[in-house]
Picture 1 (cartoon, one colour):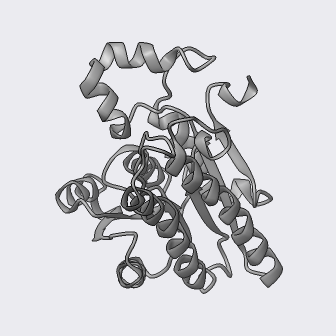
Picture 2 (cartoon, helix red, strand yellow):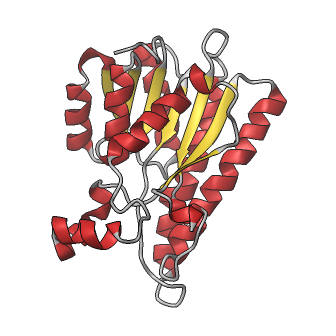
Length: 256
């Protein structure tokens, strides 16, 4: 522990598993208090319990504005402030523009884009109250699919690209308003987390890693902590001159 996040309070959506859970553990390790927010109540409580006195769980459906208001209020009631918002909750869908149903399109956008919008809207409004001493940071998990497209990723491409530009708009708004709040987006490729379970179930762990790893110039899937430490950096004041930026963690895919 190096206290890179000492005194900071973070709210992490999708914190029960995957990138969100890994980020929660690393942020607590670096001195933060962390609220694990997730729709999966049992897993979320278990994750918060692992964090000890520095962790707390709130149930959050990111598509519900009332849920967002309640989660932010509970965060401040529990830990006294909010400095960092990590929007990590999301779902994937592999379908072409012809295959996808309107209801599926709307569900992906509701979770992956509308949920981030609601977090930014209400998160910024709260974080700006607590940044006189410590800087605030909004971190939005997009995807490499928010930068480069795939033929069978119509809804996911659209939603994650929306997160990319929404993050820039939020960054400019906060800067223009004089808030001590930064907003950046993060763009991972295949990371070995539960979002890949559909491939894991279909091919098995070893074959999945081989098939997906072949698409990455570096030759393998990413590990959660390889994204997590970037999230710690963006949450900390070490990144105090970064806003509206895209942090690409893709093993070289976008360089091709």
